[in-house]
Length: 133
Image 1 (tube, helix red, strand yellow):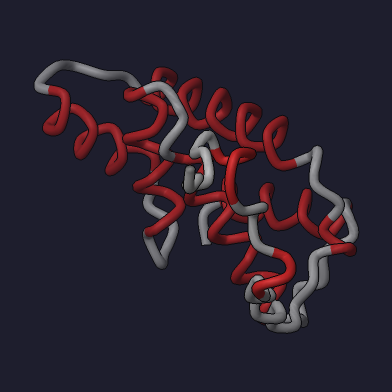
Image 2 (cartoon, helix red, strand yellow):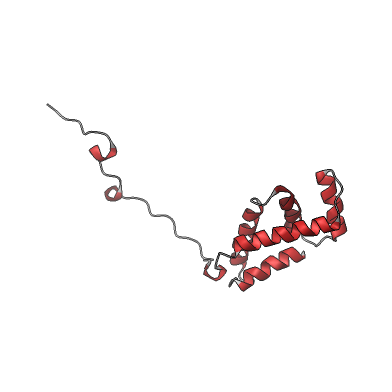
């Protein structure tokens, strides 16, 4: 597991999340994956690689992979900076959510409106009722 993943799971636990609760961890993972989409492109690319990779890659391999993806020359320091920036951005976005309050039970189905709870009929909808005259 990459250090970035460990760092984010540590934040999850600090915010009240329970790593033993598979449903809570899945919700957290989905939140992280959603936040990855919002990151700046260069940060997103390397962070997605480290988040989804099952095993940690040495930085030198990340540098080679990223250089091929971007078509340029990168340094290990550049990759580390992008990873660090991405982790900070994710921590900031995820820290506003109290993970101990996340419901792991299935949500109840939304209530269907009954005829009494529907919108009012007639003129309040902008349609005048027909008149006979």
